[in-house]
Image 1 (cartoon, rainbow, N blue to C red):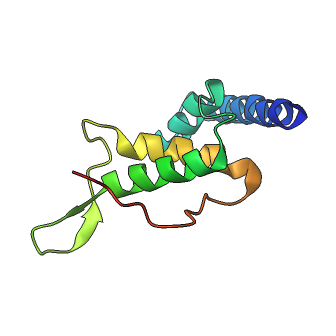
Image 2 (image 1 turned 45 degrees about the vertical axis):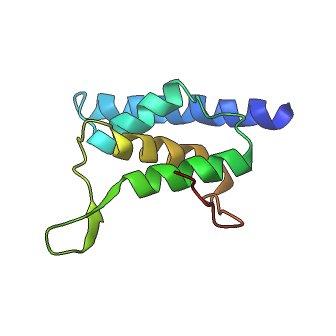
Length: 112
């Protein structure tokens, strides 16, 4: 429980840091900074077990990519209808207190 409280305090501090940054820039933040502020305001993944966070990270990462016309792997448009880049930013914020991203221990097999 103490770990959860400490992480919650981290996000409160992060929220205040981003609000101060916005105030110093006349309310201007980059899109990713706004997404980071959004997550710090409501850290909905707080307490999520690492294995589930790793699966979520994998799923969102995969959904952020597509094959382009040249047959190369690329990113979908940042402002796509599903907002996967926004979700990816939330996941990186959740992972930031640990200073590492989740790692999947094995490959998942999807059934159709």
